[in-house]
Length: 300
Ligand SMILES: Cc1ncc(C[n+]2csc(CCOP(=O)(O)OP(=O)(O)O)c2C)c(N)n1
Ligand SMILES: [Mg+2]
Image (cartoon, rainbow, N blue to C red; front, side):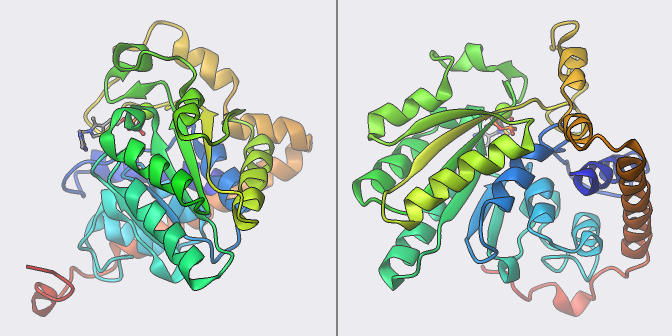
């Protein structure tokens, strides 16, 4: 979780130094969702996520140098520098993509679950997506098919209270998003998304159910995006005091309180900060991709 936080802060500085083109969507505040969920899975269980995906890829263990290089468009990037911030993908770690089209990866997650069922493996496909995504057609199609075919899929809503600049209530007529599961006859459960142990436990239960042929589960992780939607968003629409209240429940602080060893946790922060600074420098030292690579791995 500290690695993700430090990595994201580093991405912020790259943008301020004008070293990256395009935009980025940071995961600050949501670290316990990715880390708790991934901790409950096997390394071979396929995962998919959104453009707010740096945290999930790092939780899966991808190299921070390759992730920074990807964001910088350098050779040595996770996808050869062609995907950028919104498309970090590491198939070697069963990570089947960060997806920029809202909801587009839910049918992919269902396909990964179908593949596991068809091949007779006991893999579980887990997918992360935002609160805004529960209103996209692909969400409903994906949950329906996963339920009808009893596929091994775990759907994780990262409810960070906003879809871009709109609070959930402005776009969604229900407050408990897990209730969407009822229409698809699957369990719909809520969890404190800032409590890494709670996330791990609830995902473990869903994964076990899926692995045993029990079908999909919808999990709603309640969390908070501590930064704006994207690089250009100062998040002035947030009510006064909201950020402060959530900072009181920062997932890393909560975990450090649980551990209760200030010296140990401070040394983790220090070690990881140094590791991430070194990763950033290493990525910045990498060359731009060679011109000859322009059309490799590109369809069209
Ligand atoms: C199909 C589609 N519609 C609109 C957009 C523009 N868009 C990008 S992010 C976003 C908000 C999504 O909010 P949410 O699902 O809550 O995810 P979060 O960004 O909060 O993690 C929107 C509308 C898009 N990328 N894809
Ligand atoms: Mg959201």
